[in-house]
Amino acid sequence: MRTIIPHTENPALREMAKPVAIADITSPHIKSLIADMKRLLKKEPQGVAIAAPQLGESLQIFVVSGEALEKRDDHHDSEETAPAPMKMKDEVYINPILLKMSRGKKPKHEGCLSIRGKWGMVPRAEKATITAYDETGKKLTRGASGFLAHVFQHETDHLNGILYTDTAITISDDKDTPEDYE
Image 1 (cartoon, rainbow, N blue to C red):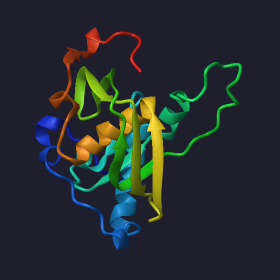
Image 2: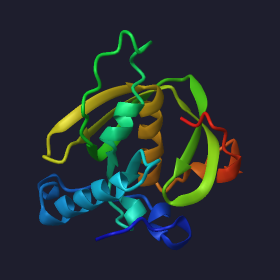
Image 3: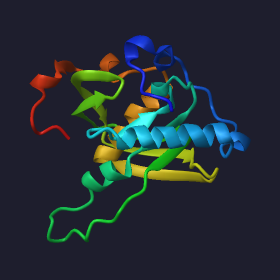
């Protein structure tokens, strides 16, 4: 099984990831890679998403954790009006393209499974719309705000050879991270 490679040992994190041929989306290699990405993400208590380059695979794929989406639902104002939590599945994005991003940016705490022990404040657009293919090869377009918009931008950066430390306003050691980390 593949592993998450630290940024200091992973040249794929600084490369432009290659698109996946549509015909290859359901190939054994891509299926195996996505399965490994999902397994690795499940093992990470603070893991929200993972991109193929983090495993040394320079391919345009990222996975967003269903568990993280459940915990970070930005759409409800209060617990009283929120419906019972649904079990959300991991979401796979292949050959993603950010179609639109809002002009308004908001800094949020951000970390990375490839850069352990550090956190940073990174300004990101508050809204984003992405188009991609899912793991079955079906094209999708999804709009997001808040947390998920932030995730889309972080993971798309991975596919473009950019790390959050390149754009962070501040970077702190893990022990200095405020308790209100999102």
